[in-house]
Image 1 (tube, helix red, strand yellow):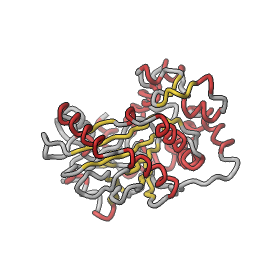
Image 2 (tube, rainbow, N blue to C red):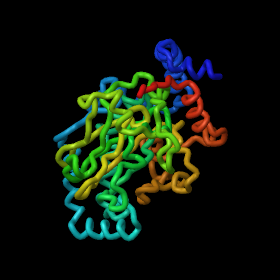
Image 3 (cartoon, rainbow, N blue to C red):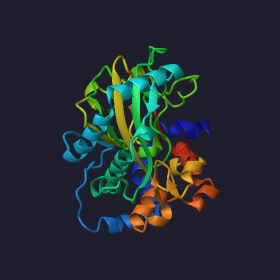
Image 4 (spheres, one colour):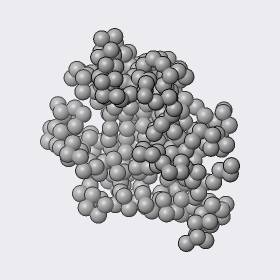
Length: 337
């Protein structure tokens, strides 16, 4: 076992994964585990549609896109001074630094987010990247402020990958202007051809709750030059489209001001996210928009997008088993001190 652990740090193991095991598993993942999604993906992309092309990267940054800006402007107008002040007071009372605002949105704005998330542009972007038709798993509309109880980076503000599946795609859209002081999202520009089959093993020793598999800045920076780091710094409407399962990233550390962000996440049937036990994922209503009911949705693409779950995958706990499989075979990147 020690030999195998050490062998997984070698260039030989890296190329075995890259040239043989990963291409084979890609085929299994697309055509067997995600057979239904692959079939829908073929039909969906039969006609040419506009999309954002990630070009075999794990992320892309978009600015000044009119479709994104139209939605952002409406959400920004909703975030009145009074709303944000009430949100700040709530966070301070609860000693938290993040507050979910989605439930406070009026129905018409919720519907506009749903319509945007299910538009041809966004769905085709997700389906082209994933290689299978996506499931809309999460929508967050959150407000962040400075954590007055902590002056150091913590939890998601340390470098990590979100280990919840093989591939996924997130749209992080800034609703307010973001600079270095109000907590931008940072991510690695480096391509990760091994995806879920690689891991930086220099994670935090004796981690606190929420710090497992997180990496400190000084360690991560030994692997990345400053020009290999990108961020969502920019004016409102700046959008980062990223596979957070395969791209190392971290939340920005807030020093002052406010940050309001919209996050729309797409997953696949084998992700742990779509196999949570939480009752809200089992309902015949879309949990973030209760005006949409499963029996009223006739379009097969939309029914899959909003409601697809697998009782078989859930019954055999396949999602967790696949994560352990990736971990067992990880190519281990060791950053020497």
